[in-house]
Length: 86
Image (cartoon, rainbow, N blue to C red; front, top):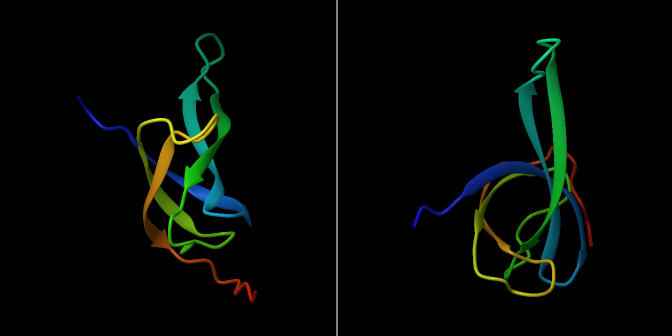
């Protein structure tokens, strides 16, 4: 079985051990040939709470962890220039 991986931007980290990641996918419209952008939000399990809002992260598909959480945080691709102080 191939494990799916996606790269997206963290939108929110307000929940415990959970981050909301926005993933963009680009595709060509079948009739008009315009490049369309589709976005989808994923709830991602972040055990150590490493990522912050604005970070570009790599996420990986996993078994269901809760009702809506089916993805795990793997690593940070690029960190945000904004520093969130807690």
